[in-house]
Amino acid sequence: MRKRLANAKTRNETGFDYVLASINVNTPFGRKAIKEKSPYFPGEENLLRQEFEKLGTILRFISENPDDAGELLRIFMETKDISFTISRSGKDTLSVVELFEIKSLLLKMGRISKILSDSPVKIPESYLLEDLDALLSTLDPRSDRMDTFYVYDEFSEALSEARKRKRDFEGSIRRQQKKQKEAIMEKYGVALTPRFDCLVSKTSAEQIKMMNGIPELVKSEEDYVSVTFALRGDAETDKLLAQLDDAIQVIEQQELLVRERLSLEIAGYETGLLENCAKIGELDVAVAKALYAQKHGCTIPEIREEHVIEIEDGRHLQVEDVLASKAKAYCPVSLSLTDGVTCITGANMGGKTVSLKLAGLVPLLAQYGFFVPCKRASLGLSNYMQILIGDNQSLDRGLSGFGSEMETLKEMLDNGETRALFLIDEIASGTNPQEGFALTKGLIAYLKGKPYISLFTTHFDVGAEGGVVNLLVAGLAGVDFGKLDKELRYASRRERINIISKHMDYRLHIAAGGKEVPRDALNIARMLGINDEIIEHARKICNNDKGGNG
Image 1: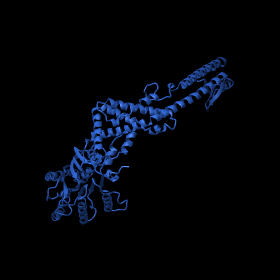
Image 2: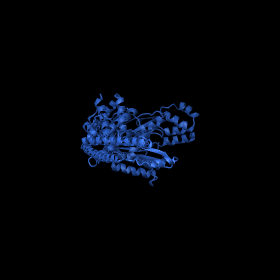
Image 3: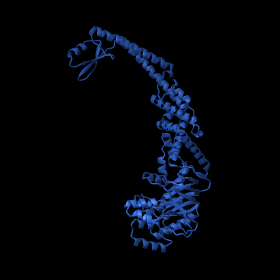
């Protein structure tokens, strides 16, 4: 069992699970494969590079052969999981329906193989299916390659002869019944239907009496409006019917022998069939990944040996989808992280938490072999990743928000190892500012000396902390406030927030030494209508308190 890269909360909070749920696999084998995907760890860089090379080939195949890609998707959508039937073939005799399903799967495998082999793009060997045409020919003795199945005469000479005898007996019975029918017409003037029966209304009492007096007929059915009389078999017919029953029994025995033989034939191909199913699953996942990457503008990351995270114009896919649904543009963010501590500071509405989640999403996607939502990404693999972010379930668990944070922090530090990635969102914001600031500074001091990439978001001004990279959200630094005030003057409450968001610059830059942290929170509060006297009083406090809350 491989070690865990990230816990469930980290996968969810970073948006990794959202992306995983958006990858549209179409086969049951693909759904199984994507659930069982394992991440790549340090030391497996070359394996991951090979995985991305294969995915790049599949993306090129899709881009250059859209018709073939569409046909492949249609086959995937028609594919059923019959792994259990395949595995059962060596123990039990398969039914006609099960034999049909295996033949149908073999036909789909053949179609997939043809698409891949005919492609001008050389498909990686690991996706190519084993040739099982010999088994298909066994199940398809007429070589018509139709998506149907029947226990054909060609499967058994004895079966073919028994079916011929059955047809002969049926013909003889039919001729004998016609002779009886003609005799009844001539003798009694009663016309029977082609089914050798006659329906009489109960209102015709005389006719019913007459029909009851005909020995060659027998009452077969009766309801509240009519009586049906059918032909009574004679000695010759009864003899032929007995011979027909014998022929049917032989046919059933021979069909069972054929199904037993075919089941054992299939069992001999069990390994090849199941391996092909697994390959179809891997191909399905690869195609789904490539299509998702194509739709969302994702790229292949560069995999480095050293522990770094470099993201150029990265986009958080879940947030981007939400913004797109509201016809809003996403502002890409760039990040460069190495072992040590990096802090992102800035006011609320500045996108700090989204940037933090992006720093987790990109390497998580990469280590699971997914393309990443960036213009460019250069990444070193991590041994462990964890996010510490507000726990909405803490009250249900009987913990305060702060208590839940401390519990998660302990888990994070206990599991920390070389090449870990820690993402910490405004820790201690739920306790009193002095203790919160002290705890934040203490944690930063501890993590500075560890072989981890530690990324904080915080309102505390930690820019003067030695050895810490301090990133600032550009925010409203470049905004023309006079113009913005005019836009806000007659806007509704909801419109004001949207207008401010539109002008917010979410990009990050390294704070220059000694440069004051921007006070966007005060600007935003003022623009949203908070009394000027309150704003000025708060500004004076901020200017006199350089080391406290920002």
